[in-house]
Image 1 (tube, rainbow, N blue to C red):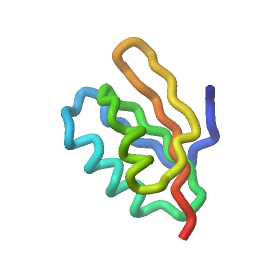
Image 2: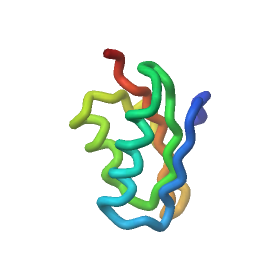
Image 3: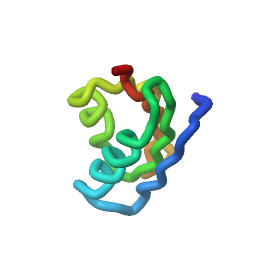
Image 4: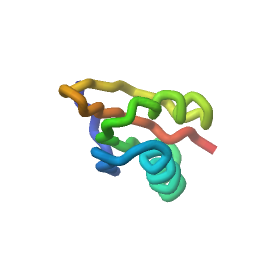
Length: 75
């Protein structure tokens, strides 16, 4: 799956909670409806989306790496 993402975040190799903190800061700077591609070795990104109401458009696993596409919720 590939999505057209306006923003990208590489959090590979970082341990929780750092990837989620970086993700939270990145999403805060995005406009509603924009898409973020996140690359991470942590698998807690879907829980972040569910908790804050953002849409998880898709996810793929590439070995130990996970790629997520997240659409920021509207206001």
